[in-house]
Image 1 (tube, rainbow, N blue to C red):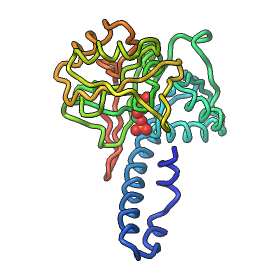
Image 2 (image 1 turned 135 degrees about the vertical axis):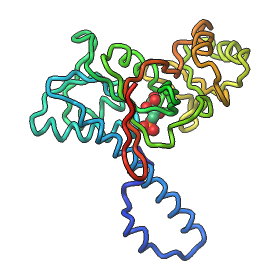
Image 3 (image 1 turned 30 degrees about the vertical axis):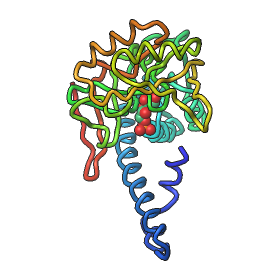
Image 4 (image 1 turned 90 degrees about the horizontal axis):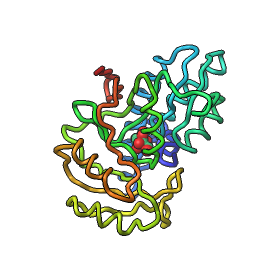
Length: 259
Ligand code: 5RP
C-alpha cells in the first residue's frame, strides 16, 4: 500500500509545480507519474467490479492493490444500505474490509459464495492466471473454488500471451523447505525463498513462498500437477480454468471479457 498511497498523494497539477532542478527530480516524477497511471487503471477496474455486486450477495474478497478500490467502493455503498457479506482472502483484506465497514463471514457460516472478486499477476488469453504476488494464493484459491462466479480485475499490464514471466509463487510448508525447493528445482527452475524487509515472508497460513521464475510456461496444467505432487508443496499460484470474467483497466477505457 505504501506505493499506492505515494501514487495518489500527488495530483498531476502538483507534479507539474515541483521544480525540476536536480536530474533526480525528473526520474522521481516519472516514477510517480507511472504509479499514478497504473493506479488509475487499477482503480477503474476495481470500481467497475463493484457495479456487479448485488444486494444480498455473499462475496469472496480478494487481495491486492486493485481489490482495495473495490472494497473502498463497496464500503461506500454499504454505508448507504447495500446488504452484503464477504469472506476475506488475507488479513490485509480483512483489515481493509473492517476499515470500510464491510460485514464479514466465514466458511463455518457459509460455503457457497455468489461472486469472488480478485486481482492477478498475469492473465493469459484463456483467462488462466498467475496469482500470489501478495502471498495470499492459498486462501484466494480456496475462496475462488467456492464461488459461483470468479471475476478478475487488473490493469492492462497484467495481460500476457503466455504465463510465466512473473515468477510463479508456490506456497510450501516451512519444515524442510530447503528440500522442497530442491524437488521443485528438478522441474528446471531455481526457486527463490520470498523475503520481506530482510526476513523470510510468512503467509497468513504460516507457510513460506518460493517464487519460481520459469520464464515461460507452455503447459500450465501439467506444471501445476507436477508441483502439487511434490511433498512439501501446499499450493501453486496457477489458477487454471477458474475465471469467468476479467475486467481490465486501460489508459483509455475499461474492458470486460467473459468466458
Ligand atoms: C495476492 C494476489 C494479488 O491479487 C495479485 O498479486 C495482484 O495484486 P495487485 O492488484 O496489487 O496488482 O494474487 O496474492
